[in-house]
Image 1 (tube, rainbow, N blue to C red):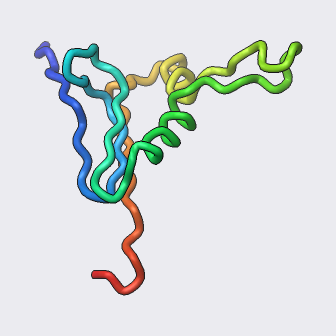
Image 2: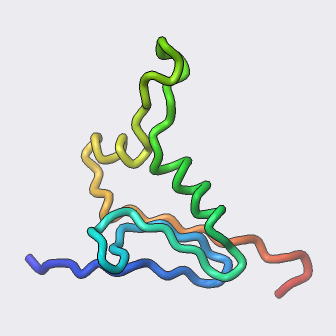
Image 3: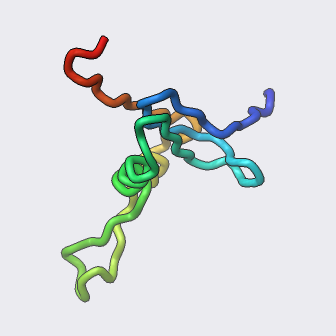
Length: 97
């Protein structure tokens, strides 16, 4: 079996990208990238909704328990996160071609 060489993802202009990769000097992990026209706030929103644990509002005392993230739930169900890819592009302005 061939060892995979992970690289940092790069996004096209107007694209928000999430996939498995490796940042320079780091270990392979889920990476986020954004192209021109997007910014790191868009990336943070995606990270929060998909990769972060959320508080269990029904726990006592309040916020004492965290629920697993979507990525943790998928991994627990036996999915290979190295194959996970998400790409979304901004809408084109009205009248643009």
